[in-house]
Length: 334
Ligand SMILES: NC(=O)c1ccc[n+]([C@@H]2O[C@H](COP(=O)([O-])OP(=O)(O)OC[C@H]3O[C@@H](n4cnc5c(N)ncnc54)[C@H](OP(=O)(O)O)[C@@H]3O)[C@@H](O)[C@H]2O)c1
Image 1 (cartoon, rainbow, N blue to C red):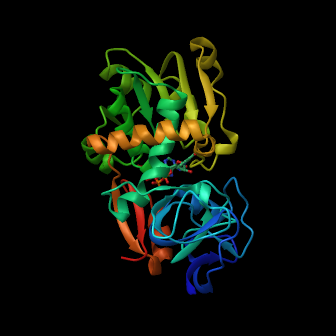
Image 2 (spheres, protein in one colour):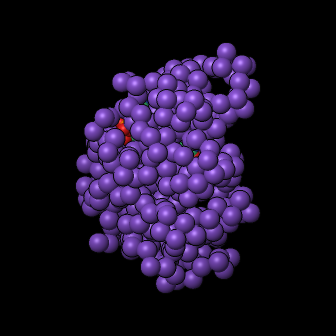
């Protein structure tokens, strides 16, 4: 059967993405064919397309790691799902080997979890990357507690908003940092206890003014680069900074904030959600926590905009425009 598949033959801007009509291969051992309903877009995919990601693309490269859909066919040895099952695809594979920007995608069965009942396709596609990343860092790694102050940079991103909600679920106090003053109101409405506009305000100063001199227990930062110096000053003694993205062009030259780190006994570490996804015990703990939050109404993906698969170039342009507050979703079957 043929269907639309998004591929790129060279790295570059959004315009390198091409919609091609290709045969869907039969699933191999341990693999499953999923008829895609909706795709969650992630900044990692823009970085992969541009050749700025952990994984170097091998053109012609497929792309996309998060989606929801219906199982159509299973390969040898697959017993965890059956044709007709509604599933979410977790980002648990190299995009060079699999890619979900398509009508149909073959993915490893191990990357599938059940589509949460009652959730629309848009929400099901927008859920797991953002919330597993936030839950994994805030709860699984940093074990934040009620009353802790948590600084969340790039707070309007899908992960940033998931982190604001997760902090509130735990009873912590999320401080949202954005470069864009026009996003401040949306971030307050999303549950931020304080919004700081970087470039206009200093995070450490604003935070201590607002919280009676207290500093943060955790900084959760996907930007990296020179900004970590000032962010380290926002931490209290024994605080932790988790770096999880390279939005700054200078990310590879991120300085170590020596004086605050030594003075305050800070810990700085990197973090990838894939470590959590690969560990069945940690994944199950995070999954049940997130489902609890969903059912309680405390966690709910924020969908900034939905595009059609035919408009994938436009969707990537919008992703990189930084206008969004929340997740971009691509609808495939409508
Ligand atoms: N380590 C992991 O496992 C993991 C998992 C998921 C995502 N991530 C990373 O998390 C980050 C967010 O991903 P996402 O898909 O949620 O992103 P997104 O929804 O596309 O949001 C990106 C937001 O980040 C801010 N931003 C963009 N470029 C920036 C820059 N140069 N400096 C400062 N802020 C910038 C912008 O907000 P403002 O303009 O409002 O500041 C923008 O709206 C990405 O770096 C991604 O790679 C990592």
